[in-house]
Image (cartoon, rainbow, N blue to C red; front, top):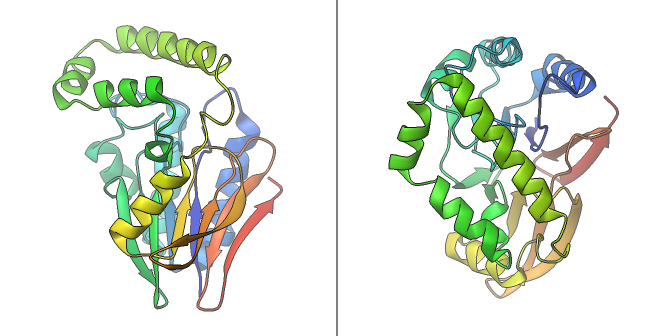
Length: 240
């Protein structure tokens, strides 16, 4: 019995190997799980549930097949696919979760989130995040024709890459105090997140006790998952 967590696949048509690896994961390891949690950035970009991109339909079908087999699938939005909505959730069978979710896994309280909200030293990104998460702006963007949304999304990705190339790596990592604060807010000793693409298990102190922060890796050249069982929490890398 195990619950699985993944994040940061950044699926898109230009990386078919990652898509193939994810499909094998859904048809293999995930089939025997108690549940699958996707902690954001499943897709490289998301411009609306009405985007007819065939890759999106394929992924929705495969996740729905997993759900129909008896494995529930949950999703927390990432910074790349924060516009993924109820239509795609219905199509795929995924259950959308808030940006912070406390779970009880085999008697172990665990907090899950994407991870970008922990990078509080990156003031520029946090200001951008606050802007694009305004509901009125999202509604306005989603009302635009698809071809305009594609252009805007491409321009935003290019701008993000350019901005990040000039930032120190430490600025784009999590802030230790932000980590402690969110763990104490939810009264947990375990935190699982993605976003930073720096897979590791970090030991810290929170709530006056030893605590652990588990960071998922991005699916660049291999898969990454966290496997939680009654006895253990494992960060596992595996080939596509």
